[in-house]
Image 1: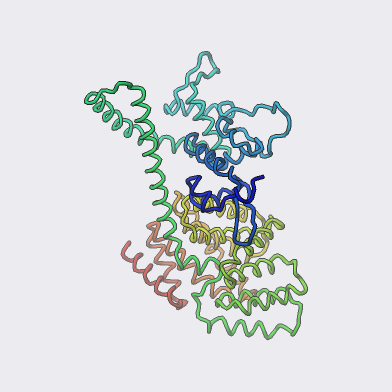
Image 2: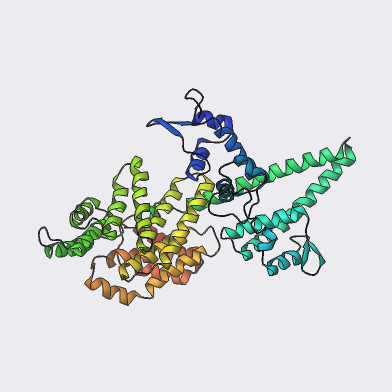
Length: 493
């Protein structure tokens, strides 16, 4: 172990490794680097060998084009021997680190894992140039094998073969144009300034082009993600859970009526939770927490109470407390993996983090986590209609905002429409349970469904639901947003 004198602060490590402190923290968080040694609360010290470890990771990214997920798997399989990043296979990894067996079983190669019809499609579209020396026996050069290994690794991590081939076709068309421009420039340079060593010139030109393309790619990715994040405005922040669109004089009489039925010191978990929810619909979280605290005295393990206790404290505590509260939510989800509404609120938390991040790669990672939680919530059973409504509402909000990817906008619309399709049933439910909640639900739903209808160019449908929302007399800024969206729909028609 390095002595205290040789240990590095994060600023020193950042300077020596050529990365930002944010990148170092991200690598630690993702398990790519060991946790720093903490001598004081605000002083983290890193081993000097982290410099070479970071450089090995960056080299694997730049020269081998390996995603961080694959890099981590290689390191885990090789007991965090960072030299393994230079020559390890990129597909067929086990989820567990390599054991002491000196001759582990050779994993399936990318070629042997790829379905024959996919390989045939790649050949047909001239995305790979392999042939066959006899029926069923593929002949490939090292570049094709390397590409197929990478494609197989992407498929292992959830990218469908259809998406892989579609992206390659688009890239192929662009690169062919780039190559033509490059070739013309190279020929012109050779003719006008013949080099003594053409091979070295070609290699230099290829490296320059590769570096420039990577730079353009990073800048473009940053631009796309920045535009995407700009859509996640204050409306999402205010309405992803409880919103403040309703007039308080509509809900307060219903709250008072519910409070009158609650006996002093009564252990009525349902009524106490309903009152906590009711006050949160007004944005008044202090009485919400008081009611939840009463439940925690006699039912501390109740998942609904735990969830709301965590969630409301998120808005009441300082920024420094957020990581601890997030850990509580993650622990709740881990303990109750089939608790659908818990997974949905975990997705919302990632949505908040997307807004707070300025790192495009971190934003993409958080988006991935967000979608995974939404899918888990969607596939977890729930017999409670209110939970079902909230899961579909959250799904509509998040997908409606994450329209960076094709189809996401429509997924948001479908989620909102599934609530509208059960409007009568839902109103009947809220007539006898949580009578206040429909006065929060419908104006928010109409506003945000109308907004994404407008984004999708479905102006007639947008106008229809937005006018319904107008009847609820929303508070500012919701009322102003509603009128703005109505004007967009009218102009679009």
